[in-house]
Length: 132
Image (cartoon, rainbow, N blue to C red):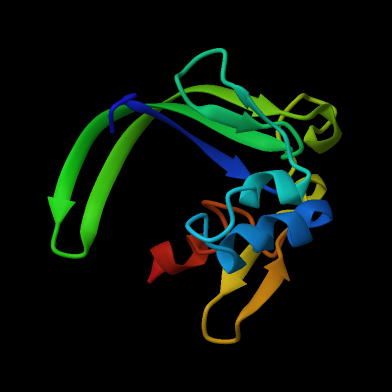
């Protein structure tokens, strides 16, 4: 809130263990929580927020608005820069979700699931429903 900036990082499956750990440990009881992961944070060049160097994708954002909601604080941001490791780019220099090896948390099963298999084409897979 004070810095009016944040980063949104997408870890790859190769850092699953290190990414899971901060959800297990409390900084109140473990002062070296981040250091134990072996990850490294550096200051973003664009915003006043950290970038984890081992993560293949980071969005650097400026805070546009903060809204108090009954369930918590909603933060709206403007992406001012995208940092992507070359290993996750396609031949045209665009981010390839399959190469990203991102994962998602499923709270119902308490599991992590890999993301990356293309299962449809955006703005095309449902186009036939326009004819009805």
